[in-house]
Length: 304
Image (cartoon, rainbow, N blue to C red):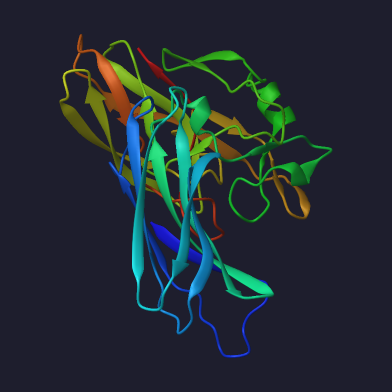
């Protein structure tokens, strides 16, 4: 998705709308360790010449700049930059095209375009993007549902889910995130890709949903390139659900402790036994925790 942002310092006396710069990324879904090409086009749609123009292109925190000189009204210029994605890169990488130029003797302006690419995460922990657990004496460090609610670290520990704990539900082993309260400890399922390896008969998850049932579609990708779609429908966390793997006696809300039980669930997908795994596309449920909008939170997963 491309977004444009303009910044201003000093403008000519006449009205001045900064010119547009476009940005494309090829391939649109790059791979770690592989090449990526940024192509940016700056078009001078103003009535004045843009002087001492410089165009910067960047991938994450690495970039390059090119001097374009004077750009006359109506003229366009395109520059490309080919670079290599780092081997250990993962998650959302922001690509940027940023043009700076003088608009008169005593002032300059700029225009910018950004495009985000989402690389596969190397592990579920790398995909953690939400802090859902807070301690009883520091309630505000986590927000699992967009309304300042959270799981209690103490209640979890009492149920056997201390940081890094090994637990088994329904014969399936899980490792609870080894994270301090207030740290990012779960992935909000939004269609992210997570690397997998090994093989087994089932891929299992431990998590819960907020603001309603977490319903969405994902897929498993095997090493031979074949894909296996699957769907999930995980109940809301509120209440002591009969199908829950864990029921906690209370939770945190913005006003303090709420003595209403909340539930965690196991769910998953049967695999083709013996086939080597390559990756997992998490179900697309919601982009981020938001009050009133369902979100699915995954704390742990295992292939067994």
